[in-house]
Amino acid sequence: MIEKEKWFNVDAVKAKADELWNAPCIHMRPDALEKYQMFFDEKCQKSKELTDEARTCIPGAVQHNLSINYPFPIAMKKIEDAYFWDVDGNKYVNYLQAGGPTMLGSNDPEIREKVIELLNGDGPITGLFSEYELLLTKEVMKLIPHVEMLRLFASGSEADMAMARLARAYTGKPNIIKHECGYHGWNDTFEYDYGIAGTKESLSVGVPAYYHTHVQAVPSDDIPAMRAQLEENEKTGGTAAVVVEPFGPNGGAMPVHQDYLQQLRDLCDEFGTLLVYDEVITAFRVDIGGAAGFFGVKPDLSVFGKVIMGGYPMAGGVGGRREIVQHFAPPAGADYGKVHVGGTLSANPMCCLAGYYSLKKMQEIDACGKAAEASWKLGEGIQKIFDKYNLPFSVYVQPAIVHIDVTGTFCLRLTEDNLDEFNAKYPERNQALNEFAMGLMAEGIVTLSGRRLYTSSAVTDEVIEETLEKFDRLFSSYVPA
Ligand SMILES: Cc1ncc(COP(=O)(O)O)c(C=O)c1O
Image 1: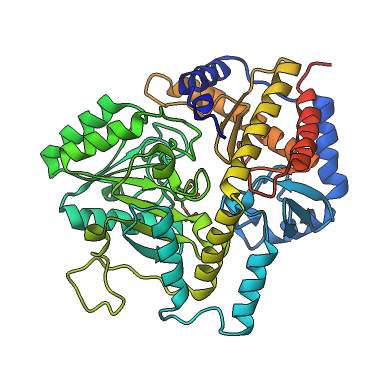
Image 2 (image 1 turned 180 degrees about the vertical axis):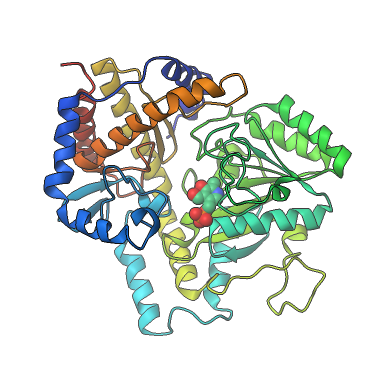
């Protein structure tokens, strides 16, 4: 049984982040850095050749935002159960889970067989209705009861974009409030104040400012700030939706207090605003019933992605109250009073089948419970290593998600007052993170950018033990010689 309270010491997490940011940046010892660098030079030659060539025709050499690119990206070949193998034959423990979607471990044989059967028989894509979209929809509705209707999309980014359009159409109000630092995909609406709180439009390169005329970012976990913004928005036609990642912005890296969602719910009801959970990461990961199952607070709409299709393409969806979701256009598109959405490959039979059978199997084997248990064990083990080597780094856990902060940048909030300090400190912190991520890869641990570990039901006690040995070696490299 997960001890929720253990994680919800949000104040301790934030205090630790402040401490880390205010202390000098901690680097790995140069001899260790050299050793890890040698792994890339000596053991990753095919990866180097492939990515050198890719650099000539693919911007940055890789198509994936989550690749570890320092000193160069590794070309992966095979993925199975809890492991990766690269093109040079090196083996890695998988804590990326393709960015979150795979809860049964990678390439689960039962789901694969179902997909192969479909490919050999009926075929992967029709562009028309298939029974699998119905089966998947009904399964999602069973698991997350506030989903009374569901529209599927090709990605989380698309689903977030569609959700914003739907919320505005349904409420007739123009404004959307998000959290500072929150990520809701790379669509123009939400490409605003993400990654680091307070960045506002500074990372929205190429997005015209008018996209954000009616989008505001407020600090997370701050009810007075949310109320003030809702009140302000009343002057410009009101707020269609408050959109949040329910465990906190940036995949929960900047956590929120446990009672925050209920307070948001009350505030949204007071202002006639929809409460939306962006559950692209959390649905069917932190809890088979998503954040509403975990916290017991229902939103009006939920945005899905990742796990909903069991790791098969394409994964996105918007679900929630019938009276809202029914405003999406019917497939024939002839009803011009409705909210128009599309997607050639959305809800294809292959992904819907994979999503349906994955959700079924996840319930049968309690995949969320197993992955959560693994995350607690990992978190505790990593904290013990920090204590052993007297390292001030931070580790905290949400079910099936482990956050590790070695640079103190997770809970930063940029303001006019600290911008100079941030600009002065950030490049060194970024380099320290690159070095840490490189050390992890060289030890054989694939993470999300050296900042996050996603677990799955394939992460057994043996896998954890193996991982902690690797972490121990890596963190011993931070102890002065
Ligand atoms: C909370 C959240 N919303 C939306 C997205 C975008 O999803 P996708 O990458 O499928 O477009 C992501 C992606 O990581 C996410 O974490």
